Image (cartoon, rainbow, N blue to C red; front, side, top):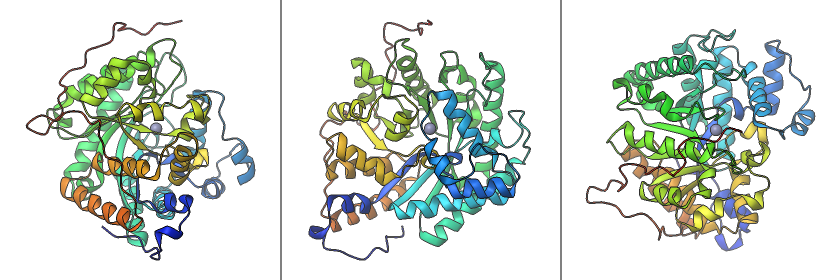
Length: 420
Ligand SMILES: [Zn+2]
């Protein structure tokens, strides 16, 4: 793996802030649309004659706080709307890689939702899937060449397929996911796809009738046996309806059911699990990792305030964690800022942050040899910075085969969300 070309420095002369910036990092949870630079958004909008609600970077920045999740999802649509031609996808992918370099991010797993651009969700855009894939992979190759950042892609399905009418047609949603899974499989049968497409994702608004298990036919389908899944679940701290922690249990169950192959088990967000002790125990036992996105949770009102974020509580209880950006372009954040927030407000040390960074690499969907290589390069850089990742003293017990102990999730007493 390419190492940083930063000048060597005496770690004793670095401030904590500089050290945090220099830590080698990985971002496993970032959506392509949500990563578009503000300037690029405006210029692509002009180039493609797309009407946006904002005309300059300042007004855009002022509007990056959302009253509710639907409002945020509409903003994602604004961002997606400027991506019209294959070269637009190449550009924003390349720029995501170049921006990552500035934060010393070495590896990114980019979530990409092909349904939004191919007409699958019956939207206007009808780009061909292979053309789209060629465009984003080209962007990743260009970024790698320009700055050494490795990028891979998670092909994602939006549970609501960008349909804000409630209730969404669940059977259509399942069909769409099946199509995306077939595309994913086909792409991975090709040489570039095999390298660059690493998993299938599931995102969108959690409503109770669209949890991961609804998509069981896709998860258990023959074509997805060799493809890891990653589900967004439990993306809300305040969980009066129980919907969100049930969604996490449901996602865990589906990850366990999917395959005996021990793919890394990851949940996007999962913050609602903090409310249930048995859920936390199961997360630990099954070595599930939560992809935490602090700024995203605050700006979409999923957590009222940074000081109330459960990250610290999860950490103290030994849950595997990593920090991520989610939608850095929309929220005006960077991975360095996310690390700094954990340091400033939640009592994390630089060694703790280095552990989360290493956890990200260890739970990435990279092949084992590349993972090892990346881990080694991170270890070298930590040593140069005189940083020692905090040991995982509370790690769950590993069985003889090295696999996780948990084979099924004992559900909490309430199996159905309470609808108000
Ligand atoms: Zn996300």
